[in-house]
Image (tube, rainbow, N blue to C red; front, side, top):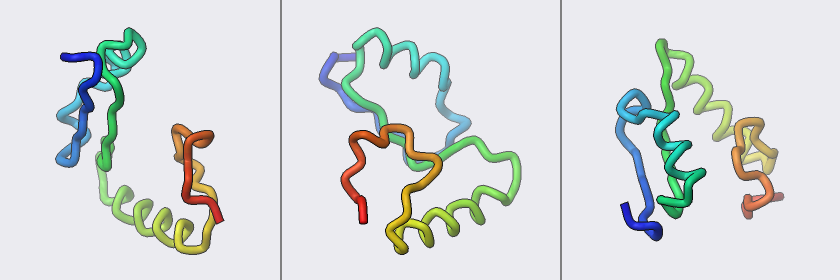
Length: 75
């Protein structure tokens, strides 16, 4: 991939090799990656999403934020 490429996954978390993606990001062979999916073996992911949306509406900081220092949606 080009170094200025972005990886976007909006389908299923199980389609992404997370270790390989982390390696590519660490080696600067990819500019950024974003995903709105995760690996969830059961229905709990849907409920987690509801709780996260509730927290965002309240202006709370999410526990799952990976890049908190770059997060711009604060209170």
